[in-house]
Image 1 (cartoon, rainbow, N blue to C red):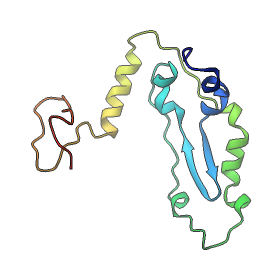
Image 2 (cartoon, helix red, strand yellow):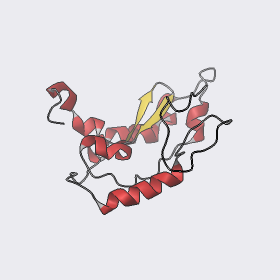
Image 3 (cartoon, rainbow, N blue to C red):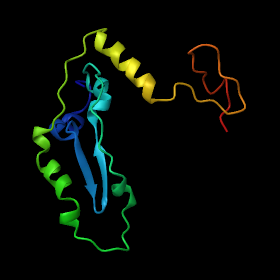
Length: 134
C-alpha cells in the first residue's frame, strides 16, 4: 500500500466501507471484506451479502419513488464511516487463512475446463497453454 501514489490511498475510509453503491435505480454492494489480503490484512471468511433479487429486476419503464425504494441503502451509505472494514495486518502464515481457503473451496469452482476435457487428477489448475478455452 505504501508504494501506491497518495491519490490511490486517499479516502480509504470510503473504499474500505461495506456499503451499497447506488447509481440511479441500480444497487450493487461493495464488499471489501472479500479481498482483505489486497489491503494487507489477514483474509477472513466474509459476512454474507444480502443480494436482494428485486434489486436486479429494476425496470425504468415503471416509475417509483427513488428515495422510498432505496431508503435502506441510503441509510447504509450515510453510515459508511461506521461501516469501514477493519482487519488484522498480515505478517505471515495464519490459521485463519487455512480456514478461509477451506471455506472458499466450498463456494467456488476450483478448476474451469472445457466440458469435453477430462479433469486433471490433481488440484493443479492448468494454464491456458494447457487447455484452450473456447
